[in-house]
Length: 125
Image 1: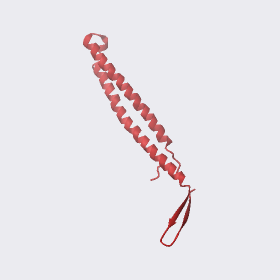
Image 2: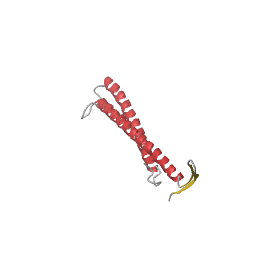
Image 3: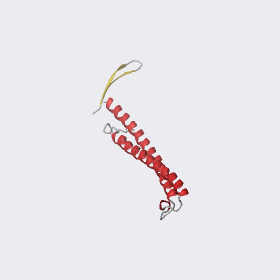
Image 4: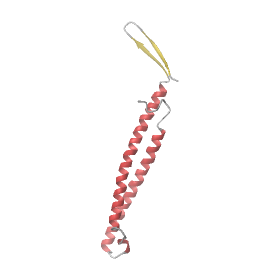
């Protein structure tokens, strides 16, 4: 199967999308790390100062909310990183097919049999 669609696709779109998804994955990993750090710090702060306004929330427990946010960010970043890897893999395969298709525009190949031989000229257009 020719992934380059007859030499018209070079894999640039897949490289671009792979780069964007890798950047999103890196941003989610950083955000998840910050959220988990905040959760640990807030849990220690609330253990010392239980009546502080930072320890109260309308819904849930703030340290737990930070843990959930950090965990979801890291979970989604793993899935997006896998998607990024798959896009980069497809980009490499498409680029190879593109180069192979363009390298075979004009080919001169020898052939031979038991009593004959010669050259075969192939032109693609």
